[in-house]
Image (tube, rainbow over the protein chains, first blue to last red):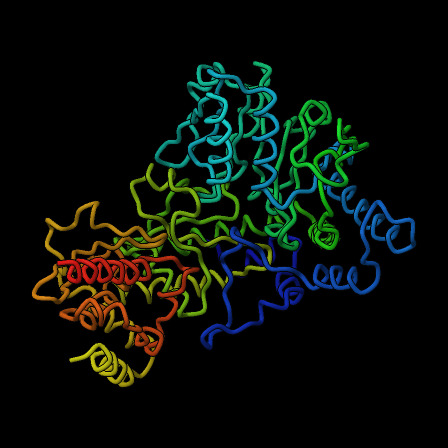
Length: 417
Length: 142
């Protein structure tokens, strides 16, 4: 087992200093200092993000793009500057390849709706994987039903690893492949490059759900050569209500608009409307300016720490967590056992204890985890379990959090067994 | 005993517990103790799906009064169910419809009735009231 002191020294990040950037971490729950391990659901926000949004409303709030006045120009600059920051963060070729959405779910719905309307015909298929979040299943089911197309699924093995043996055969009739970089329910990092390459060999575009990836790993859309990529701000230390769809220019230009309204138009008459250029074609209505500014501040925060440093620190903590937790009597890790191929998430059960019971007793000890199916019911069905307890890490978690979790599980286990 | 009397009795019992651990230990014990439902009634028809835990509920109507047996896959939920049944068993549909289960909040387990948790207990209480409504309607008609 890794020594707790070793992990604090094996990377470049001073986690104790980082913790001070997040005011909420000093909260007490039922008299205990909060242990927040529900980061895959949403991360906490550093002071700099809170300040940036506060500052936006205090000093430059105004509607973007249309105003001739000073404040509107400042707001527009902040809003478009954030877009450029996001483009740089994932290494997009152009900033107009960054579409603001409400989050990963809306990003996927946008592609499902627009791509589906344009390209899906009866008999066509969409290929997803067996470890998807509902938000990467249901939008495709909806458009497939509408178009007489069908949904196909890359299977998963007992360890949570996608089975790619029959991938080429699976790609027959497929018009688009959509799957997650990191599974939100099991935490496994999927073989992204292999799937993208296999799809591209057949000329099939790929959408990557990176909601559980961008906060843990370096994501470079050009080196991945991915066609669409979706993520949310609130899982990346940013505010809720805003997210990103990246799309290659050549694909986005082929898609029809998503919603109609202001901003997405060039000219409107009652006879005919012409649409705006990228990215505005997909951004109807007044956008979430403060959210964009907050997201930019979150990216600055992450870049300040260094995404590789974050990855290393979390990797060490993950190894420590797996070592510590697997010593608990009856501890069952669901999905891959190794830390190397895992990001952020530890999904587990203890003996025959129901995850809801375990989660409740952990909560009583001030430990926040998620229990249930994690919006991935097909994954739970695959492993014939009612759900799991999910502990998920962020950069501010330390070995004490893991020790508290382990002690909490032992206490719950004694009470419930 | 009336619904209110049983609730007040439960609340008084819980006041004796020193800390949350004792309280939970008691609820868990209640949950473990009884097979509350006969296996033949653990059917899909009797299953109430909560987001977090599953509950089976079987209802019988005898001489103008309702009787319940139930089970859950989560033991804390099961313990609370046994308390709810203790409170409502043998009451008339009218009394059940009009009942306010304040004891759950009073013993500090209101999170089990919060829709954000959307778990089995809340769905079960709703279902019990729906049954009571249906039986009341039936007895008025007949």
